[in-house]
Image 1 (cartoon, one colour):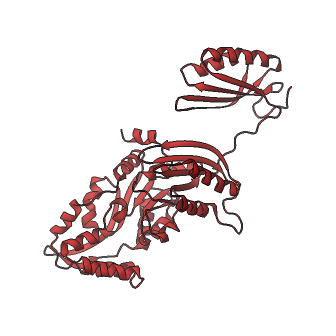
Image 2 (tube, rainbow, N blue to C red):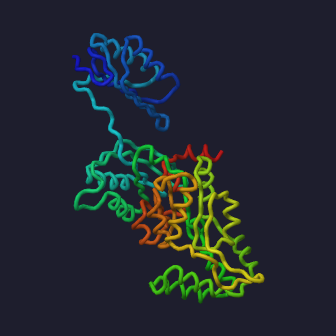
Length: 406
């Protein structure tokens, strides 16, 4: 049987699919292609993977119809010696080339179960999406699995957008699900900007300062009013800072020494810096507390509020413009421009309402153990205590990270 030529398939050759499976060992590919070369076989497409020692090789080839039986026998005899199985199938129709995936999904959690994958697969099927490939990214300290997906229409007319459906599913089944466009743009991100309190670090700096001043109750009362909507961020910040009036500036250094990084922050920053990322922190906290940490972490940019200090004492005021949600987004834009990057090549990570504008402006906005208001505008969410989950959302795998940290 012959077919009309397709792409690189030479006229007169029969399209054939060859599948080789078994325990991986050195020399398998050489053995397969030695047999094929002896019979003038044309290679059109090929894919090979090794999964935990098990080889799977598939090749789309063109074979002279008079030699198909001979090629089949040669492959079987050769691979039997190596302990592998082979299947040779003549194709009645020439297969279409593999489709280009439109999106990439990452499933992340302390444990990923078959039920999780089933629920994600069913949601994708509801949108007419097809899963093209699975890849394991890491199995410690979290499990991360990546899916290549072709989505016909991620925003169906009158329906719930796929991103929103996956966000709701993530909350329901208790794993993180990140979705991003496939292609080179996904790997083009080159600047990452973090919020500080409860994101880069585990604490809230204003509360730490208040504890030293013995003003926890006053600060908590202002925070409660802000949460009720009685104060905006700038008003609440100024009122909380006012409670610190008279505090000795040495307390700033004591608090700075007590800062605790969120688990995975050092790994995340080191890996991304090795890959050429610019790194930044923008905080509604205070520059005097953060500048030492920023230097230690080798961050490229740091912005925060400035506490006024006179004669070694805090005055209870901040100097200059307050770093609110609008300012955070503006600083992200400045960092991108200074780095020669477009905003679509940036990543922002935060946890609160003050991060909404920055998260919305970034090419990829990640809500880290965040309040609902931020999760609603973020591209994806991290709901584990590990910041290095961000690395896998950016498409890195365990080997990539280990190499970057060497």
